[in-house]
Image (tube, rainbow, N blue to C red):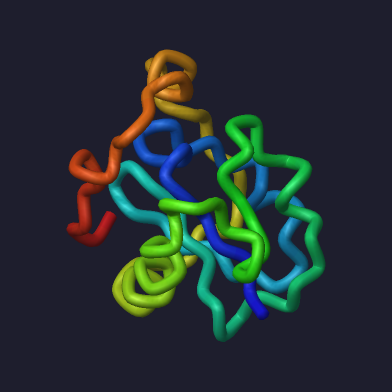
Length: 110
């Protein structure tokens, strides 16, 4: 069972989680991160590091966010690994409060 990044990460893209990952399973898109389910070792270290509480175990993804399980797997195949923390977008705190952001997800490769 892998961990999954859900909607709160869209346009926030804090990368604190990346710094603690022992296997470099994070992938970076233009305005979102995903976890490669084939690389994730279920260590849970990333969960506590996410300031917007966007990371969940696959079997604990909140109701209404289930589509992010398949989305993480799909985009992990297309996006490049991110292995070091980067500054969050300047407006990340504003976006952290916004709900229903899926339509804002940019799927192009970063």
